[in-house]
Length: 326
Ligand SMILES: CC(C)(COP(=O)(O)OP(=O)(O)OC[C@H]1O[C@@H](n2cnc3c(N)ncnc32)[C@H](O)[C@@H]1OP(=O)(O)O)[C@@H](O)C(=O)NCCC(=O)NCCS
Image (tube, rainbow, N blue to C red; front, top):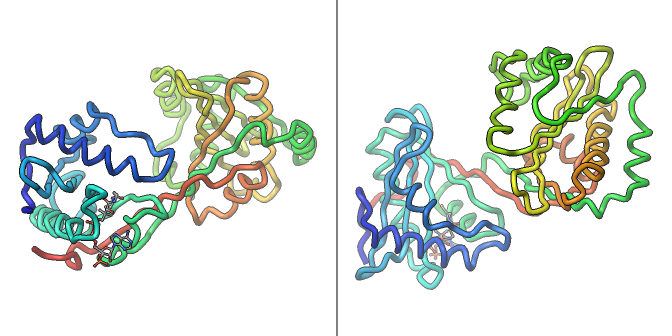
């Protein structure tokens, strides 16, 4: 079986590629979304977000035994890491095919001037020992947590709400922030420079509205609860109910401005959000959220509310120079 580069995939190769993803998905962790043939083809044929893609496969007659895709963001060179994803048919694993695909991908990364490469995988899958055996190190863990609304007794919510910190009051809105709170919300986002997504962005009322309008344009519903101290937004929590959601809403950002931390503002706002959703959207059965594994405070708040870890995804990083060669 040879490893070949696929520069311009044929329809037959796209079908085979999708078949590899489908059989790999069938033995993968439960709950992972099934691959979609249209999406597979779009991913392989076009780069996204200003990135380019390079593809390799192990061919076995006219079948593909395993595949490797590398995403190359931005310009060639050492500036940003490439991203690799390798999938081998379950029946053909542990025969060195994954390692050979990784060597081919490493060659492509070197040719593009990349010095590092990342890979996003789920904990507890063969990807972990595979990457670790090739010198990758875990640099980030993300805990996917889920809260089942039925697991939160109404009395507990009532108690958390009554236990709010002195000197603060809650406000809430659906959709784009009302004018009276727009500037204060922008100041809160600005104050959270320690929050990776907010760092360095010129937050003002206009940018806040624009970001929220994107959610509305997708047809999704944004719910926000904010804690005010006087006219200052001390913190906020956002939940999005996706258009056509099958009972699952997504937690977006929750943040408390540094000088208002440590007073249970976070759990108070989140309890108010749960009560609001239970009343306004009774069809929502679950809320999902992703937390960085090192964000101890947010994990503690979520665990106290009843969120349970459903899956852990990890980001692995390696020096391209340390990867195998062909
Ligand atoms: C991860 C994956 C690509 C590995 O493919 P593979 O062809 O089985 O890998 P190799 O045979 O080259 O394995 C190389 C080494 O990785 C390690 N390894 C791979 N799978 C392993 C497993 N299930 N358990 C323990 N170690 C494993 C071993 O050290 C192995 O060497 P060995 O067989 O001599 O002990 C394959 O399991 C797969 O397709 N998984 C699902 C997709 C996925 O998660 N991809 C993300 C990875 S970028």
